[in-house]
Image (cartoon, rainbow, N blue to C red; front, side):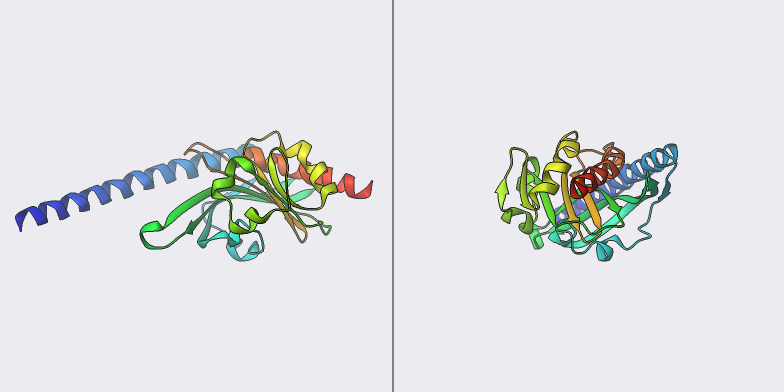
Length: 206
């Protein structure tokens, strides 16, 4: 009986320590992203002011699991476009097979309807949502479904960031990349997103 209590106490202490370390890491990440947002003249909120899980529910990343949650939201305008970037977490599986996935996400909300396109990066194929695994064709870097013209326009811009995936839906364009470490930030894809939209816009007008 005593051994059972010792084991229970050990598990309890380990759990408290894990939550404390996790909280500290999250706090450091929030401070880092807030500082980066302010450095480029954008606003920042630790909490999701835009209900991203509902607002972007038609995107395959957001619809790819359950318990979807956005945090550390950077928002404002980059060039002509209103932008939002955020940490995104969702869960897949259930019970002992349950796991969490983390992405840095940037969304540009444009003033024009975008032809449907999904470009899921092959480097992230193992973690791809089910809808991204049914892409119509394979490029060297992406599994692709949708407009070839839009894909070619976006490809030249998006290839600059390793592991980057992209989807257009309605009037919005979403870029997403797995968060590889505590110090990974989404600022690079946030700054790249409007350029990708402009490349697509030029291709559609051409």
